Image 1 (cartoon, rainbow, N blue to C red):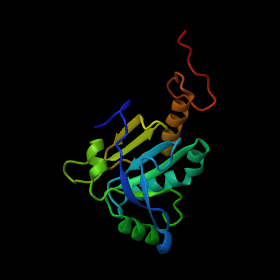
Image 2 (cartoon, rainbow, N blue to C red; image 1 turned 90 degrees about the horizontal axis):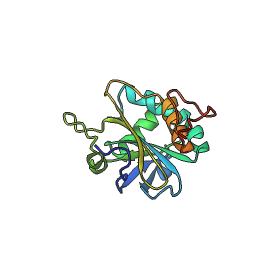
Image 3 (cartoon, rainbow, N blue to C red; image 1 turned 120 degrees about the vertical axis):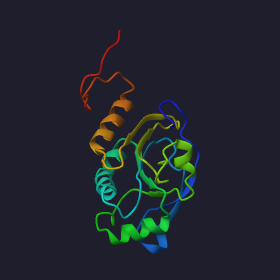
Length: 179
């Protein structure tokens, strides 16, 4: 699995960005958001139980990520058409303000090393990538356990200080001085 300090892979995928069939799809690649931090939230499958709770929670906080000059994206190995069907039929996702990446050929999850060996789907992995394309945080949850978007936002805040941040550090708290 690719980890901290490594370059996030180059990719180009179709993404579902809306429930409007005429404007539902967009091609997104690793250069689509120049100068921004990017947060990739991979999840196993559309039309499941834990995944929509996470996606809705992250989507509800999209403005907070945007305020930090970060682009949030969610991704699975389902197609953009399955993403569209899910967004259309699950009211929690209808107004989702973040792209849903379709890694249908599993190239990105394979390069990242997060393809589940038994199911063949994406593991429940989160990557925070800096504006230079370097992975600065990675975490992987068990397939049955959802993530906490507040913790991902806290880690992003800490990374953006470029300082030493102690345990439980929150935005606005003092950082550590190693001198």
